[in-house]
Image (tube, rainbow, N blue to C red):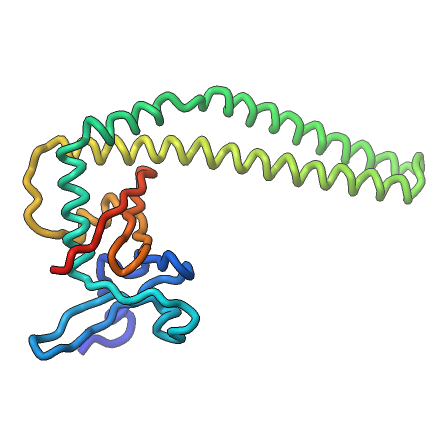
Length: 221
């Protein structure tokens, strides 16, 4: 029997990855039993706690694995129709314009900081009244906060596009190998899937790391 930290190191591929499409809470792994034997399923944690709070039913572990295999095989077959246009769109994203915007924002942030410094010096030398100082400083501080947030959003969008492009190209290289994928592998799933959104007991969406969201029907194993 594992004790201490060791017992927490054994995680399943779907642990923390399945998100309820109804309430947004993560799914929990559970064992189900029936006359023909036991099987593993994943259930919304809200539904487990209170069925009235979320109506999402459990989904079978094996059904998710089969859906993943179908999704990967479809990408192998339809890579020209799905992945190539997606990669082209990512390459065509105008990051150059957004980079110029970031540089412009950085300049405005620097000017703002200089204005605050001048204002502080004027106050220290008693050249302006305290009321005027505080009012102007509050205005500049709010402006600095707005500029910083705008820069953060732009920077994240640029980095996100570059990350998605890298992940899409990696996925493209994999599906282009024409290797027949016969069974589910944890490592393959974790390599390309960020999360799974459970739409219903019959439908899930694989949210890939490259930014694609691909929906598959769940077929009972």
